[in-house]
Image (cartoon, rainbow over all chains, first blue to last red; front, top):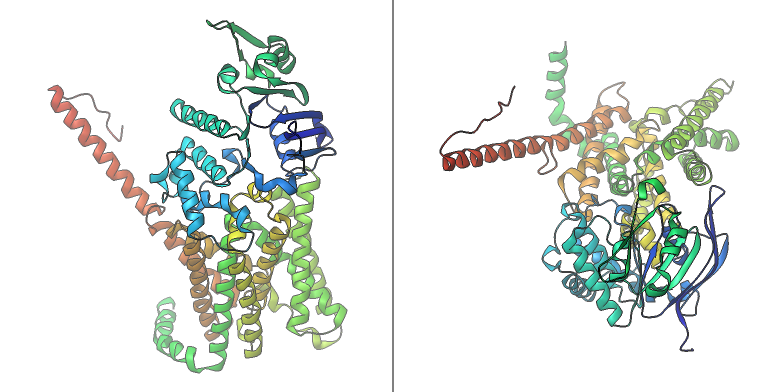
Length: 260
Length: 330
């Protein structure tokens, strides 16, 4: 074990879908303890990259090391928050049950959850401010509440590394604030957080590390160093409108329609 | 004529109840149908929640050529032989569907439709060929088309109960895992659950449930026993455990009622009769279930509308004059 060990180390990652490359030769090192955004236009392979790290998609080339080991030896240290829309929220179950699923990895695939799992789930729900919704049917949740339930499930996993696919998608301003506070708390506790993010305006405010990608990696590193006009233009193909924020930092807005 | 028939049916009702317990044939048929209903209902709940209701349809239709080929190859008509053939064919069709979806751009529904008709058409061909052969021993295979519960014997029902009991035991043992992959496959995979194995296992259990019902219900309508009880049960509850239990109960209820009716009336094929019964359960559930039922929703809408009108009226009074209301029927 060296001090310079990365939380996630991706090398030469290449994935194709129907003979189209969706991820091309991506190298990425994520230091432990950063709060990192993955940004890029629609179809840039952000979700694919996360799924390749988690072994959900089989890449045609490349390898992943998590804390210096293959993912399967470290998956108890990794928590995953899928896109909210990837599941059927009309599934007949309640909030507490979904959050308990965060303990299923530790539980093994045949043992039944008990009081310990329920307590862990309740604790996670308290952290996301959803404790009073524990017995609510999941189909009755708003988008922001669904997102917080998924976050609570990840918190219940009690991992070192959190991979989140669009945790801010479709949530209101208050929920976004609550979620970012939570992510900062995780970072303060020494955890590593990687999140696919769409709002370029808030990248410098929310995150300290960033990966810009569009099938290929454009740049990755500290936000102050790599979140530049030049890199954004390379990522989004020159349709980024830049605004000079009052404090002198560069903020950018993207006309995503014309990119897609 | 109709009233005469219904009076006749009503007058034999006490006899049917008596026979259900004391008549060998009827008791056997009812027990068999109950086993089918319970197993198909419980496993069907998972098929429906995973949006694989139509997979059951493809599986059961695809079982037909399996039955025919098993007979042609072995020359035997024992259920074990024929149903093994059915299970293999149903399974192959499912694998073919999943394979087509994974490897081509053909969508799920098209792949299902394709496999269903290819296998079923081939099955009808095999069956026709068998029936035209000179040896007389072929008779009876066509019962698998629409089912003939009256042909069940006690030993077969016992075997069905054993196989179905095993399937339910596996379901109970892996309950948590099956729930997890049904709700969130990617997450399950990320925490190291063997999702492929679990997926195949759950699909296999559904195949078992279908095969159990082929003799009594038939390949054409067996899928209704997978889908209908589960769809009805979903209307009444928001809890997975309750839904599975309720689905099993609805399946058994429809199975016993349908089988008893068809066994006591001449020329009433069991499959269609059971399906009529289960359809009645679905209809009642769609209309009357609290929260999700249509009648319930209609009353809730009306109540909300009235509340809104009252609030508006109160606001009008506060303003000191009526506001312009749009007439509901204009």
